Amino acid sequence: MLQGNFFFIIDIHRKDNTVNAVLGLDPGHRIFEGHFPQSPVVPGVCMVQMIKEVLENEIGHGTRIVSAAHIKFLTVINPRETRQIQLDLKFSQDESKQVEVSASLFNEGAVYFKFKGLMKALENGELQNKNHS
Image 1: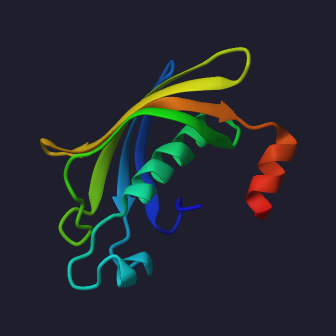
Image 2: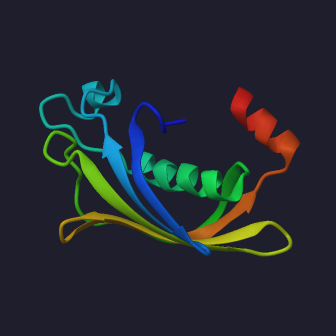
C-alpha cells in the first residue's frame, strides 16, 4: 500500500462515479533511493497503484487488474519538482463486480499518465489474502 507514505490525498471531490483528487508525493520516500537517487522519477507501477488504491477507497473493496486496454506514460514525474499531482478517475461497476476504469494523472497542463482498463472487485476473503501477501 502506497497511500499514507508514498502519496497522500490532499483534497478529494466525488460526484457519482467520478473522483477528482489532489495527491501529494513524498520526495523523501525510500523508493527514490533506487529510482533514481540523482534524478528521482515516480515509477510507472506506482502511478498504476495510486489509481488502484484511490479506486479501492471509493468502492470499498480491494481490486485486481483484469485487463488494461490503454496505459500511457506521457511525462515523468520528478517528486522534487512536482510535489502535488491531480487525479481524474471515472469508473462504473457491474453486477459481476467488474469495474471499468478511466483515469489520468496530471498537473498544470502536463499529463503524466493515462489508464483505461478493467478491474475486478475482490471478495472479502480475497481482500484478506491480498493484505497478507
